[in-house]
Length: 229
Image 1 (tube, one colour):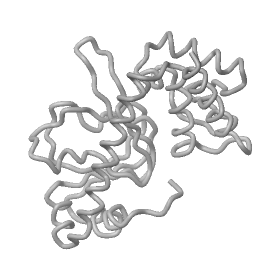
Image 2 (tube, one colour):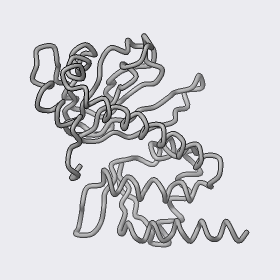
Image 3 (cartoon, helix red, strand yellow):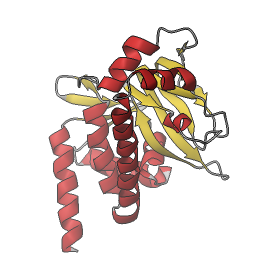
């Protein structure tokens, strides 16, 4: 991300990732497992580059993506709780570099720098707000609005600039469906409709936003139309 690193992430980069015990995970393919549901919750992860999806999979093998984590972010914060094992899973969406930090080393940093607990609290609150927003979208918004919302958010945070003003998001239609909580078929139909209207463009394993303002305007129009109806 282009935004300045917060003190917690800056401390992790400068004081932790080079210590003995920290390992460097450089997956060279999509779908590589970072951790599985039920695995020990004893490490924190720092994303140097690439993208990671945090997800939950049901007994019917259907999954919902809870969060997409990109460069300059920490994840796996459940290791700071009293839970012994993971209740969710993490998988690589885009190849990159991830640092695996043992919980004891991470907590040691926080003991040396107690002011960092404020940033950890902010991280946990941000995760809570993201989940609250996801619940709101799932319960109160239709598929088209959810697509528009996440396309704008992903383009602003993770999108790679392409062809001047366009933003390329490295997600397949199926992955987007898992993120917005809809079926693959409904998501595909809605994306094709948005593409015909020129709001987005579709590529191979990528979604292209010609204009973030255009996507936001379409979402606003959709919201106003829902209120009228």
